[in-house]
Length: 187
Image 1 (cartoon, rainbow, N blue to C red):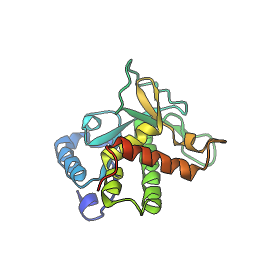
Image 2: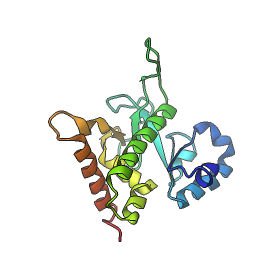
Image 3: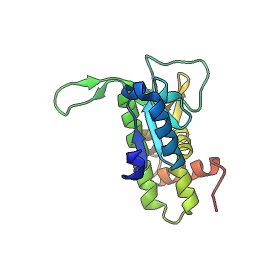
Image 4: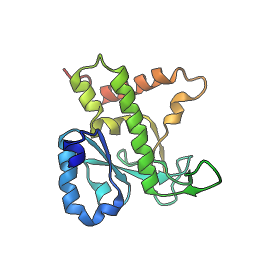
């Protein structure tokens, strides 16, 4: 709760190693959600099943997961790069895991929200508040992702592919779509 009350963070990344303090964390997650903070966890364990958090599963750079597969698409189940993540600048050291994927997704969300804070000054406070909420970030991730193995693989690199326009314009378009899908502009 200190991250929310004293530091006024927008995003929190919880490690799955805190599962032993589940009841305490449930209260903290609820408190963060009520203050419109976005909470990420690795896509494993009890914390990732809380509807106030965004659980992230590990996937390869192509969106394939070796640990997660379900026959039907779950629109709230997200994955991103978390398999063979390069962790050093020198040498070939790679790590894999849901914790790495959750960190990557947190960075993606932070980048988009920072962009929104700088570029969306003309939007209403309610629009910005919604976009910075768990529901707003989920909608952004739905729009930035493709279905792979029953989850939605978050791939923001697709926004900057050659011949697809200016990346800044593409980000603005995605955020506008997210607002519309989230029941349109607010007051």
